[in-house]
View (cartoon, chains in turn brown, blue):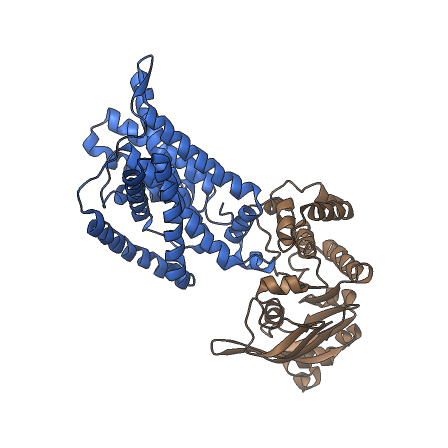
Length: 242
Length: 288
């Protein structure tokens, strides 16, 4: 269980997060949506330890991880797959995966994990010795997700895993994400702009606007244009029309 | 032909020092984006540490170890005391390193005076291979430099630490998200870079005389080599270093020695005009 309470973040004079409250259980895929600049990525980056919160708390199960270094957050069992994949382009796919397990020291186990994922994703397994920058966008996204899984997190956060990918690849990633949650029991929190993708992959959605969670509910809420328009544009279609 | 080989050989021994320095420059730049101009002064300090140790113990082997070890400590002190505060503004780090040149040179003059010093060569004599004169000391220097460079390369490519260094060079935030202690890894590059400069200093000492101003020439060449190799590219720096040494030696041998620097830096400028990011894979994207 990931529990975020009254989380506030300032960047200089910019008040980016204004008291975010959010809970995500291990047995669900939670998708965070919202307009540009709402602070979705800031939530994930802060939970992962890249930003320092000015106020509020973050708990992963019983551990208070708010304000920890990224390294300690990973050790506590939470890993972020960053936006835009951010693979180590000059390193091989295998080396990228090894970096994912940087907090682990068991070489045999790491090799074992890589072998297991290679079976699971044969097209990645066939390219372990290739520079990560030579892979296609979809393959890179899969490597980025596996790299995140190499630290054996209890909760995995992903920042826009669908970005820049072909629809068929997006579909596949969605299937894999749900499978990770259902079969491997890894809690998933992801940020998405692609509403259609968010709808198919999520168990629950949270809408973030102007640095606060303004709505949580089942995915079907995103079929409600009035609700979306209200939170994305600060108005309803009716008032727009009127 | 013999003469050509002779010059080339001398060039390799010169270039080995450039390569040592350039690898340090390129490592520090690749991770911290700081252009560390005081690296020539680190070479100078390494040379004096080796000289003092040789005077005390009479051993060049101990001198080599001491130069590397003392400079590693100096590298750590400069990072902890100064450069870590400039990581957000690498340009500040560059200005600071310019100031360090003055300070370290001043310290050098204060302790050792401006008079040149020299040590007895560790290994006198030379081999004569059908007219090719090969000073034994040069063989040692090339061997030591090559071993150190190969060791550095092996560590970078094969070890967990080396992979972390490359990951931080590629993408510091992503590395942090994998649990890499980024700041610590950056600190180690200052230590390794300084230790490499220390080894370079030992080679300079065993090749001839040293003075508090000896760093200057190596600084310029070290940077030129790092640029040609592609800033942030370790293999590029090593290869370009040897190339630079050979080019310089040939220019001195066949051209007029007074114009030596002009020839060499003329070539450097042409190469950089042709390929602004160097001949190797430069700092855009992949850094190592």
